[in-house]
Image (cartoon, rainbow, N blue to C red; front, side, top):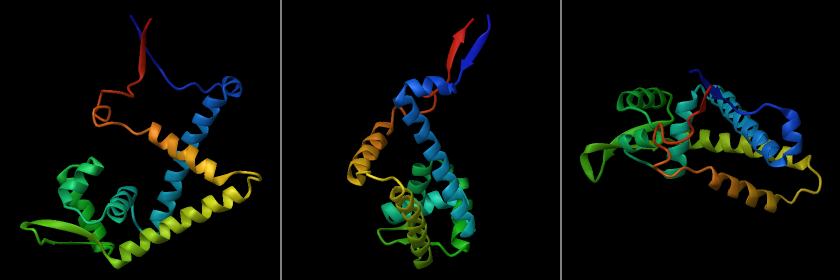
Length: 174
């Protein structure tokens, strides 16, 4: 008995006949290019991808305890400590005592961290704005609604996010 792993179809002729498949493949490319874009901008700030992820969470969600940031990022406390040490040394965040619990810490963005995230979002907004300007007749409000719905459709509930519950390659016994 042989087990074969079935991967995503790469048949462009198939995609030409299935516009939804073509949209899905283009969205995968968008995600990959967006990650590459962030990675390049992160290197300009001398930050790695996980450093940017942490700053992004702090920028959007506000100050939080290291254990909460660790849980959101799915990393161990040791990994989080090293990340916080590195990004704090770079001047983008600071750890301070939690006023509600003297034994705990809160992580805050520094003004430099806040500025870095604003700059990153401005870079991304400019790239998107320039791209959309090249697509004539595009209703940007409709595109925003469609992208929002697509984003929601890809959200995982906590049960689906557990390892082994979903997203495993399909196997077929031959």
